[in-house]
Length: 262
Length: 339
Image (tube, rainbow over all chains, first blue to last red):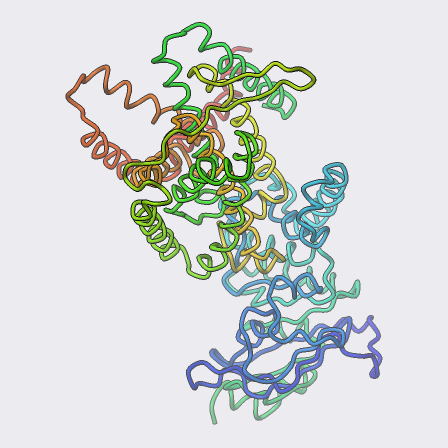
């Protein structure tokens, strides 16, 4: 669909996964997975329940430590790094069971997603009150701009717990974008929301991708996956069984077998 | 209420409270009132320090009296050996207790939530046993006595002030309260405070926005414990005796009640709780005479804590917030009626 971002075949990958393996008490959740994501791409990761998609996400973002293999971001190994460090490198993510801060307002949720990127130095943050004020003003402006795009601006001063599920999803999505990360990883952005909201979410993702944002998406809703993805990777029992354009994946016998059985 | 109005009201409240704090002992000069005020201010500082840890990063440390007690022993035993006076001893206690919190924090924060509480409780019990047993150092149950009264030489003069009377101690304590409030306010009303909230609400999500939870927990723990150590040093110079009971677990009980009944992670709630629980025992004395002995007070505290936890999980501060929110929502309708 969005072929307006030219992807050079020889561009170095933004994210490279080599031989990634994760075990849970003998069960191999992710098995020797290789994967490359080029800047500007929109890639989806699909597979039946329990095929290791979220586990793979968690290994890339540092929430789980893989037993084998490597993850490189812009050529730098980030395997097993702390999640907060990986975020600050430029990989943001959302969660399968939407996670926002219920006690912070919508705006504060956005600001806190940016502030660690703005200044990492704790002591500096305490001393330079003047520049902090400026950073806060910039952050607020950027946050409100994004909130307007996802149509949550009117709720900016409401606390997170008062949002309904779909609004939380949108907020989490906006939070993932605010720091302008090079890679955004969405774990089931269309799950559990209304059809109207699914269409909205699709458009937000495509609009953002059209501006050059790289996405790595786990999604169950095949309609969404086929509509938005440039490339699809299929996992089954932790093993990568197929990879290719949506049209090719749709007719791949291995994929059909994984989903529907032989 | 618009932000400008709110700012003005906050300022007015601060000024009025400051004037009250300074002027009250001048109006009611009795020893009873002054002792009561010292008690109230002391508990307020203690609870503010406790709330940084237990409220803001939700790490309910049951071992805060350890920092208080060791802070007192530092002022009583170590500071004089180093030739430090009241102020030097207090700063030394604050510094050493912050360092102790950093070191022990790295270990304690490896365990989560409930186990953290039990772990710090264990440390508190051990510390008290050690203070009781190390009779050569601390005097054990016979206490360390004869701690010097605070003494200051006014700059550029030979005039020396010695703090002896309770009212003098009270005015010595007020600047410490101001510093405690300032630290608390600066930490919690900033980006750091926002990061505290993320750690309290959802550590996984906090990591996903770039917050390293351990760093912020250690910060809260070190600052809270440093402040507690400084308060312990003040206490040593005030009572001039330090006993192992300064590390007693009854202090932890009172802190829990002040913070959680008042309203954890809320400045107003903590002050409210401290006021209530400094005044309540005295009121009980007045009303009940000798009927309500300290043992029964503890039971009463326990009952209050349980009742509040069940029915008012946000504490009294939560009730105030809910009521004012309701009133504010009702206001526009009233205005329409008046027009």
